Image (cartoon, rainbow, N blue to C red; front, side):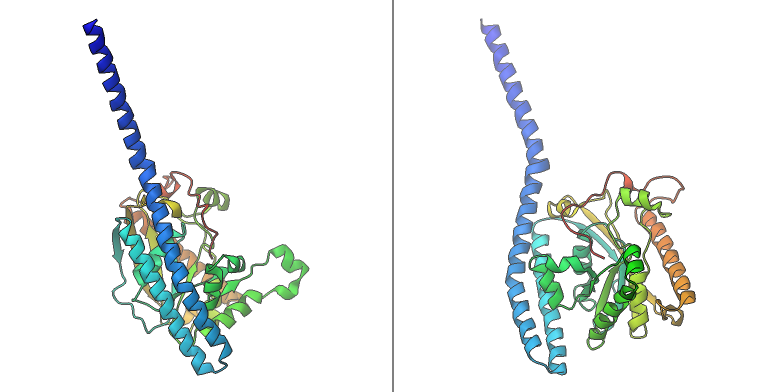
Length: 346
């Protein structure tokens, strides 16, 4: 009887050990990241609810005072509020995770210049990355947004208050039916850029127009290993309206080793390392032209953007420490990069 009892004790101990080992792994792998993501979301939400009413109050004052110089001063002050909002977001994110940052090329940038910032796009994490690395180094980033994002609670009205340009896209079919809509995008861009002439600003554009996923890459038959096909229209409009005022182009390449990751992955702390390369490019005379009405310039500009994207594609390979080889898949394509937590930003 005693040997049998000893056997039972061994089996029970083994069962307890296996249960503890299993649930410990689950706890470390799933529960802790979920708690971290929830905590980060709460901190960012509380920070947003603190700054948004302040932003709305001073926006209201700007609207009711019809004096141009006063409104320009309010725009400057609103940008300072937005930078404070970003600063405390960065602090909250830093307190809840450890990320190894490798950022190169931001040293020569200045806060009193006008920049066009372009970047590859994988998830909303890219926006957090851009806001972190450029905070206090260049003027406040203003994104070109899809008009539908105006209705995002709190954020949509905040973007409107900060003079983010909202773009309405029209399909080719609709333009054929309603040709009077052609050129509306450039009109919106002109109005937005007119507001940007009085205080330094960084105009941000994700040139691919949407987040990178394997499905989109395959559907486009993209010639790049790590990128979607670039859309030159957005930045072409910027050069057409205020190209002569731009100090330079800030070309950003963002890489997540081991990725792709969704925005929720980032909030949960699963992103351990972020690589960012920043390249400042001059605004040469041949980059300034009429993108809408000059087909020769438009063709040249599209080829210039395509060449820039080819260089960016090769740079991503270099940043990941791999040799470019035809036919081999990028780590970005090792699994589906589906980011369902956030709408696309262009």
